[in-house]
Image (cartoon, rainbow over all chains, first blue to last red; front, side, top):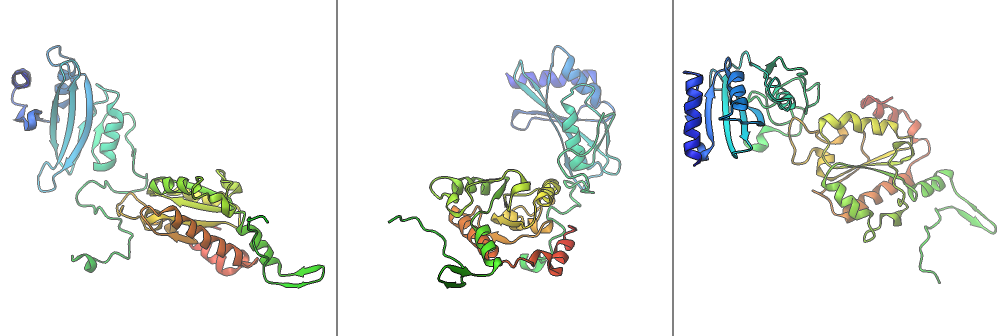
Length: 167
Length: 180
């Protein structure tokens, strides 16, 4: 049943956003597709408000950093249709040099803190966000710690010498 | 006969009708048996502290029945648990609000060194921001270990000279933490 639903969804989306729905995949039955940053808000709006889709709940917004790719920051949206119990995952790959994407707070108020968190950890700027500042890390951290060029370990430690760890 | 123990008098000169000793020793004796701890408990070490405070281990036996949740009246700051960097100004403020003489005990691996959390968001030991008197190892330490650490604090309190906090060495140490 879920499979037919997913294929109908993709058909609806492809008709409406011709050529902008890419790399459709269904890992573990979770419909996943990519789109572009110029249509992400219309895609989300359609998924939220259209009667046939009505993904009314925004589960999460996060990001993934792929340093080896040109468009190395993937913004990931998880949506949930609570009536029909189906979920969808939408990804947008953006340039790491200029990580800017329109805000989803125009659709869901709940996107506010999710986008602040994504900004806090990945430095993604959500255009139009009402209050884009750090939410979890300390204000003077200075870096976006989940980007892979920054080390995970605390840089102030002097007792951890690389030779003890075989590196 | 009662089996309640009373602390022994400090060394001094005793005679008929008088007992003479130094003020340091009397003050130290009194202070060490009436330390008011401020529990700054943020994680599992705090749970161990609750066990320490409970009837089985009975922290009150050592004169610390009265926890002080206000730093103004506290003598001993017990930091138990992971301190995130975002929380470090709060911890420092609590320390600054305590009146001298004050002591600090870092309970558990996280408070002492960051523990397993060697990461950008966690303070790598509270001694990066405030001076620490006693470190209690363990992850988390058992109540016995916390009591042992407390015993070490009592020893420090008992033997502290009354002028230590006025010494240049102490002031330099505070200045190195940016505390005046």
